[in-house]
Image 1 (cartoon, rainbow, N blue to C red):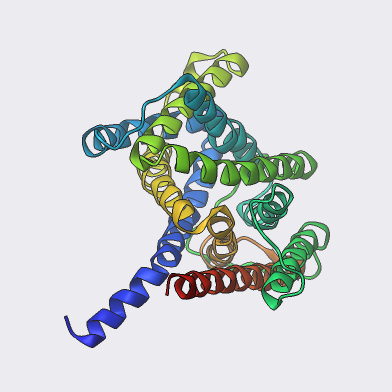
Image 2: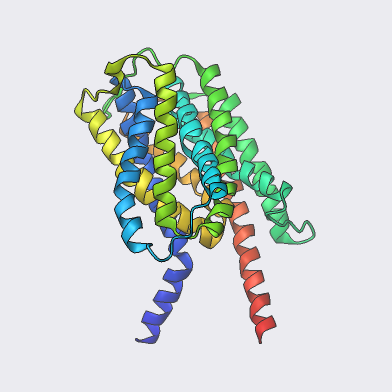
Length: 343
């Protein structure tokens, strides 16, 4: 192997988690609009959550069984309860609140609010002493400043609309909602609750993945448990049999895409990246999803943008990538210290 090839693989190995998380955000962005179109076909959101995780569990299960037969730890009752709580926080409870908020508001608003997850995750991690902050060091100052900026940007997007930018009349696809997108107060409350729950999920999965390192099996378990939890909730709130039927091709494609890509591939990548880089790193890529959703919403879907959303989005991105720089510099510093100690 030549020197250039070696250098390429060193760089690739260093930035592989970054590349994978970018691909996850691209995949999730496409899912937002499939969900939007499906909800306009009056698809039941609880049924959607149930189907997507059931399909995700079924797809991953054979790979987990064959590839991790020897590496899979024994499933104790304590571990099962931990997986049950992880599924509740990351899937059934959180996603039901999240998709309900999407039905009440819009993809741009929801993805903008999701940017608070990184800051919330960082704050909770610091409170639980899972993340260290040195206020006397530029790295620690960058983390704190980045967190404050991201929260300020999220508040700007939520509280300030500003001048409306006219939507494109010639947009290729114009999704017209039903009577939805009118209950913004309910949608905002559900979005905030889901963001808090998701932050706890990111932190909890970083702990669970160390106890249960078989990531394919972990993905299969939490998908299956999440599907059962969501199905039980659906049976409680919905008593009509017809809600379980998929009545259009867009609903079918939405379930298939969510199950195969979002619940199987993306979740596995997130577990792997969390194990490599930590929960705060994984949550830092949410702003990319916001940018992609906003671009598609404006140019493809013909959704109207406001100055407050653009200004807040810019502030959030600056803040979160200050946080990313601080964390990456912190890890490089620790690596250099460890190398010098070993020498």
